[in-house]
Length: 145
Ligand code: DQA
Figure 1: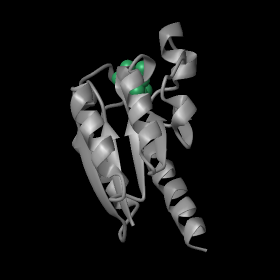
Figure 2: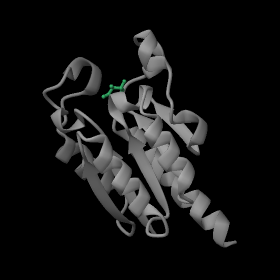
Figure 3: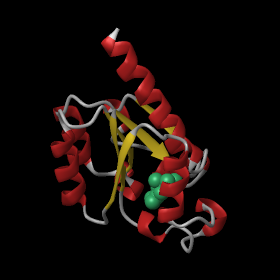
């Protein structure tokens, strides 16, 4: 099983960016934390501050990965191109947010990718990525049965 963990704008600043909301761990530390849970799963990590690069990665994920774990950052709230890309591929995508977006500013409570993802995990910090991979593994196994 091969999984892609995709992070959008400003997530490269984890650790120094609003640590009371996003925690003290850097993105590399978060990725190491995730990897620590999965010895046998191949996991690729990619972060970009650019919408187009995230679109390219989603398009290239088709028929390569069993699933994508995606934290689109602020693009979550307005990037319809990401919705279209997720709709266009056959790979299941799980949306993850470190913070509980539903308890924050009104603009964060709308996700334009939510209608096309398999599910959403919000507010569980880095552990949300782990749960998303577990769910993707579960669905991939079910599909083979
Ligand atoms: C975020 C929530 C978004 O609203 C914000 O713009 C981010 C991070 C999260 O992980 O909690 O960049 O996706």
